[in-house]
Length: 233
Image (cartoon, rainbow, N blue to C red; front, side, top):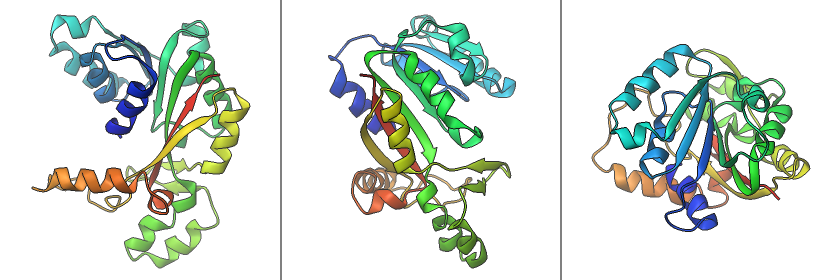
């Protein structure tokens, strides 16, 4: 997914431009640190104290110049209006968050308000049109049949979560003034891999295959996750 995000950023902004990035639900800070290393100024919001601790530890190991470009805020992504003025960011990331939000539309609308005109909104969501794929490929036929009639599921952490559908999110983005610009599938071939699976020797070929499938119909439509990029009008 990093390749997809980099492609969208490089396609919208001149090479070398230092962007203001908001990472909502930054987790352990992997994406935030990667963007800070590329020269961007990143603000991360996270409410899980354990994740914040991990992110701060990782940040502390970076050179001073990178540490100065990252700000971490303890908080909820639904409260961005409390912390920032509208139009404060060039790029807003919300990856792996909407599946834990019962009503996502207000959150997404709030994130769009944080964007400057022409800014990029990047969402990573569970694909509601492909919920039957994981149990089906794992041979759990009862769960596969049940998945056709719901947008909820239990994730690998044992938490109840919800999925989004491409058509609905496309309408949401259009309605909040950040219409869909591009979308990709993520984890087309690798969704059933074990969490503790080692890195295969041909990982670069694997990544190339995933990247190609994530851009190509019909493969991207059955990906476990969808990466949607909207652009603020």
